[in-house]
Image 1 (cartoon, helix red, strand yellow):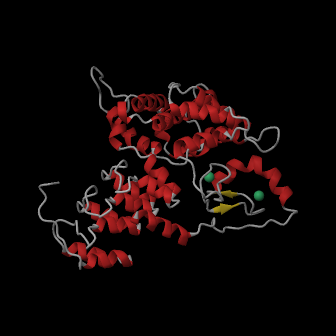
Image 2 (cartoon, helix red, strand yellow):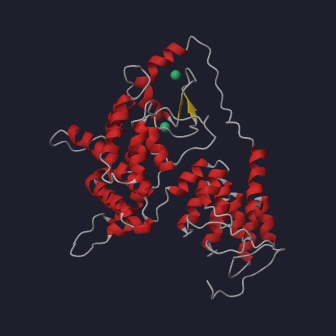
Length: 395
Ligand SMILES: [Zn+2]
Ligand SMILES: [Zn+2]
């Protein structure tokens, strides 16, 4: 970036006001009138892109990136990057845009913190997961080009984007993965190729020398494992000579297997053993990640395997625990409730339908007792957070 022409330094630039006010119309006007470099700096060395990221405005961030805004460099006094500001805003989509534009998750600020650590510090758990689960598209597209003597690549090029999207998923609940696959049937139709590529990615993460990423390696292994399992169900289902199998039913069978309560009526024993097998099959048994998972799973009062895997991939959740989950797929803050008893929540009708075989017993029972429903958010003292953050930034 050394060869860049003089940056337009204009502290009084009205674009900063437009961003602060969230005035998209004015923002677009200013951009339309301005030709050339859009890396405007304010008096603190913060760029317009950084302001827009901090504001959590997906539209403004996108517009600036479209105009070639620099996602890497800046003159912020504490070396915050646009990604740091996006992480603080808690808008995961903003972070995704910045990452797609080449933002580096490993860049630290002047107090040695990465963007994901800053997000964790302010309790933006989903943003932490989004950044930590990020993989550049090039990692996947690498396998869509024939290598060496190959006449055909490992991955058909049309699968690059759907697989990339699948890999970036933050909610790794197996039923959610099943539903994602149901929505992208091409991945399931090519399950062998896709799981093979995922296993190669798994190996690649382990053989990067100093940049080895055990967690990502495990995630690839896990995704391959889930795809293979769903594909096995499909193979067993497919009667010979059948023209069109119903992907709908396959995910339903998968969900019914995993969500079926065990003897105590609560714990998901089948889910647990399915996931433990996945850990057991992880080929890199010398690594720390594997050891940590095994010691959790074999501890005296072990947590469910799903939470062990989720912690491994998405990190320990901080102090925010009381978040409602979809009873089917684990998605956070689902939009719907069972209309009868209002005591369980779901993403949508599909999730509700998949869970009904379990819930119908409890639902009828709970009708006789008054149920308190609350959509109140978990209590986080934002004032305290803000002051802690300021201390940190100042320190
Ligand atoms: Zn759901
Ligand atoms: Zn109910």
